[in-house]
Length: 432
Ligand code: NAD
Image (cartoon, rainbow, N blue to C red; front, side, top):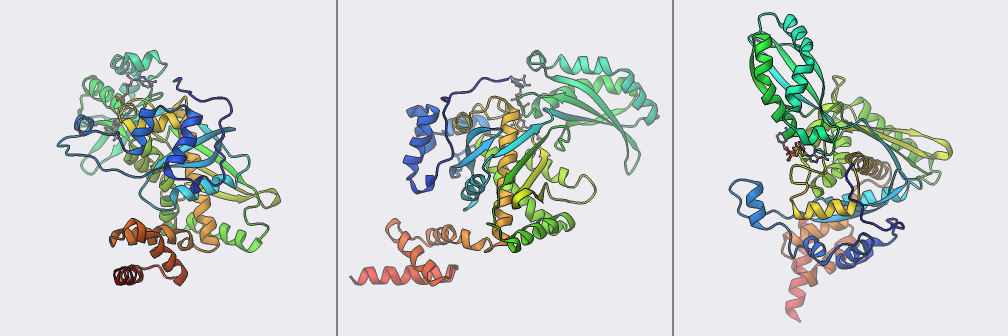
């Protein structure tokens, strides 16, 4: 377990009206509770952050960086511990929706994690006796695991490493192939590099005992042995309005039965999950690939969450998905903003990180379904949407609030409407 805790005993993240502060004031509230240094504050404010030199070490042909807004979701309590949740996203309403949903769950979220088991695949072709080969691979299990573990003494010293095998015979187009899965406990790392290194190192030995030819030697992003579950109870969120409650449940049911709806249902969940994964320097594509593949694991694409009505009109939400995220490895410890984001999250293990991320996904899903069952999502989106359009049209800082106010008053937010309002405002101003 990592020891990264840096907060005092009385951290409080249930803050009403947090959004009414300026960005600097919000940062100050968080910095005080988490003892952020001036340098860390400057990193978040964009005064320091990701230099082109660091970027050049991360990717090829670097020429700069692409900033994304970083916000904090408040009100989260996960496993009875308060958490400020950093979210990196360009989409308006996501952070507000998460914060608002979290506020509606008095006890917060409860989570569990299966452990950090990743699968590495070694694909073998040209095997004369695929089922005999499968048996020989299992007969050599201890030697295979030993060769894998020799690649990563650090991981093994932490109690991780290759733990087991799962061998499949796959009916390919041209021939039967033998695919060996290495089951590797990657502990606090996402683990792709660790697993890929093992898969490449052990492939020649597996070729020798099977007589086959290894082609792919890489992890699987369907991390079905690295599952996080979160549960949240939202107390009487519809103030006894059975009609909206009914619509909420029907909306969730459509996702169970209809992949067209399930895709959007899960996209809403991933709005929250990807934002926290990105903020913490994790591989968002790995998390997304795993989530969507898991959603389709029964052969039909389904929702990652479920909703039930509990006592006293409470809504019980639960979510289950693979969560291949790390606190070490990748850029989690080298991206300056990710490092501060992880400090803000104040987690000590990937189990905690995974639990918070799943809780945010569930909160996001609750917020979307509640809005859809009620006034629709456009109402909440409109103000920020109007701002974005005004920004696109080149509205200056002093024009922005007025344009948004006029558009909201007129009840119509569209590109053409905002353009008309902005032009008329600019014309008026130039006449004065
Ligand atoms: P890594 O190799 O940088 O770090 C993992 C290593 O850190 C471990 O092997 C171990 O030796 C060491 N370590 C130290 N402390 C540890 C702890 N407490 N727990 C676990 N390990 C500890 O990174 P990684 O996590 O193996 O790989 C992640 C990177 O791989 C990501 O950047 C991802 O984008 C990339 N990647 C992904 C894919 C994919 O998803 N298909 C494929 C290739 C690479």
